[in-house]
Length: 171
Image (cartoon, rainbow, N blue to C red; front, side, top):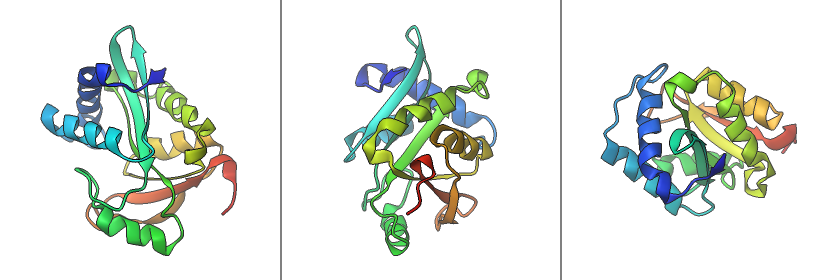
């Protein structure tokens, strides 16, 4: 595992596209869209990113940042921030993206990536959204906690927002 850096951008884009093309998403992404998503993430306040490689081949990555107030390519934070503020989670770290190439999924790599965030003070409280039950289990296992259902995304109504508190600490 290593910190995310610009030099692995192309491989990270490929891994993202491969991961989200499979279940449960079955999404199709253009490389230019994914590049914009990744670049936006790296420019956000509090960005933290980790990647797993085999040689030069990017197997997967996880990245996030402090919950912003402004919209990104994938999240309408102008609608999400007030909801988080209302329940006291506005200062959380946003687990923006965690993705593993399809051939490497269900081997513990995602949990391994997420465990790297447990030493980060910024990650004491984390919010994320997903439709993938494996993401919920991986985060709970990595951070020794239970994910709390917060609310449904107002834009993508099939996706729940979850909150986790590192090491099961209570608010």
